[in-house]
Length: 544
Image 1 (cartoon, rainbow, N blue to C red):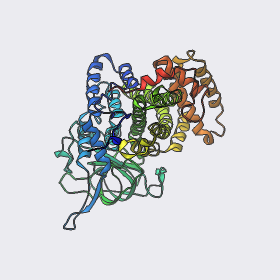
Image 2: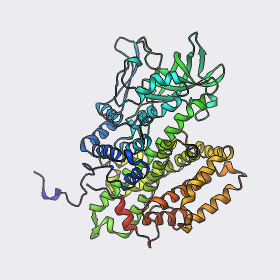
Image 3: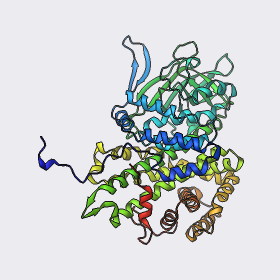
Image 4: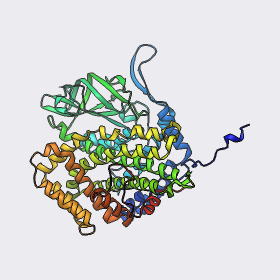
């Protein structure tokens, strides 16, 4: 029997058994704003159902189990046959199955599909971000495959299926399939021009034999992969299936799984090709152009994933502080903690609002929206993913010593937080991509300015930031050395304009004062005290 000294008091209840969607006001409002009226009720209903699933104790426990039992590589069976399989904990398969069933790979063929999927992905990454990788890659493979209509006709129905089939079988026997991607190599990293994997044409039209390696291959248990290799005509995109149509295993040699800082439930591999059969996707020599649609979609998922992680970190922090007492008052009611929480909440809402706006641009598909995506995706990928680590660390600090303890969940968020900034093109890659858009595609900047324009005149700090941005853009001398500065300013102005248009006045006012008006310090919790911080924090509080 426990002694009286072990009576537990002054602790917040676990943040579970709640609707992750309904408790996220910024996310709900974004869905209501961007979904057409004829699909809004259906979308809200499915997202509410997924929100309750996401917040359930069972699903959250699956996330813990998947993280605590990382995948294991089996290169050979007991007889010595090469099999190159990855074993996962059952919780991983349950999470991945739920994600597929929830439509996280099915955005391309239904009304409002990208907004609905984006909101779902935003929530689902809060359970365990690792299974977001295969879901993202599978979703993003669709636009690349459409460069080869015959391949798309075969694969797209399986990629957009809501059936999760974990078995490695010939594609024709599977009701649903997952895709991975392999681009980078040891000697090149982000410089895909340095790829050495060779593609030799075979007698069959469009078929090739690959020899080489990939230093990072995402989701190696997938049914097929899009990879880049050097064909006779130059760098080319290829589809590499794990199992051939006759049932034999393709040559796909998994050398090892990466031992990563975070994202431990997900397998990331080094693989070798040695006479590996592949099918060309698109024209020879146009591999980057072919695969860029996949890259753009995965980069948006990096933004969504970071926004989801920030939301979960902020939700945990606000929830804890709403129950925890110190020095005679709830932490949430103490001025300095309220300032910290409000500052974190601003970062989270700005990230969510921007990510959902970009998802809506995918649904629209018009020329103006495509031009906006060309500049806004790398801008958002650069800035939002970079804001995730400091948010996660500060949110963990709000829990005090408990935030440093594994079973409280915050260390997992902290370890996961840098990933989206590194993957799919790290910060410099994104900033330089923004420069390319500014220099080569003037319609992209025009689309950006058109997006910002409706907010002009509503806040003097936003107006000043737009003016300063235009001044900086007018002089592109030495732009490469200040590309990060430009990307940051583009991101903040875009976020500010969206919050001025769509967020409550207290949120927009606080964001513009601190992020655009310069009235804040370098750390969280330095907002001007004259703002309505209580309203900002209350808006971010999850309801259980």
